[in-house]
Amino acid sequence: MAKRIDLSSLSIFYGKFRAVDDVNMNIEPRSVTAFIGPSGCGKSTVLRSLNRMHELNHGHIEGKVLLDGIDIYASNVDPVSVRRTIGMVFQRPNPFPTMSIFDNVASGLRLNGMRDKKQITEQVEKSLQGANLWKEVKDRLNKPAAGLSGGQQQRLCIARATAVQPQVLLMDEPCSALDPISTLAIEDLIHNLKQQFTIVIVTHNMQQAARVSDSTAFFNIAGTGKPGKLIEMDATSRIFSTPSEKATEDYISGRFG
Image (cartoon, rainbow, N blue to C red; front, side):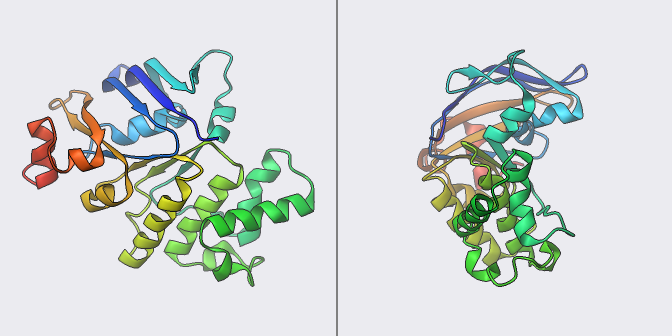
């Protein structure tokens, strides 16, 4: 079952630098939430804090990130288990290039201890079907993933992320390296995936945020050398029609950022 995320007084640091300051938000299950804002405003940093990926770059937090009421930063919580529960798709497709299409999707399953070949095969097929990729690759599962197009590679990465059955899927500008046709394929996929997953997406594309998300959070920079701030979060329809803050309106209309 997809899970709810709650951020409470979340500040994120790299060393002594406060990258993001005092973020409070609720992300509903089985929904798509878009993070928008100018470069450097902290939206990707917040996204990575949701599964503790920022810790790989020596980041740390103050405040809380709760997944269905459980603090994912509690001392007894294993970061690796967090990343199994909260999967991530990155800006550029990053399949394992020398590994086959099949093994790319199966890799996480095997890493999690699945050994039954029939079970692995069934889960790989299910994940590729869920990523709208099965029909395109079913006859070349043993071919290297590097032979796929950019859009296919990104859908393969989504299949790989969903194969281990996370409850939350994070996407950091998943279409920025793709052509318009591949972008629309990923957007259609996001619509389908939210029936099963809670999805959070960072995007610089305002039209994309308007098309795919249920809620939108706008981040901005407080000033040079200052941390990023959450300016407002609301239903996407309202953010793009009648935002509460002038800074949001200016950004969406292209007058700023």
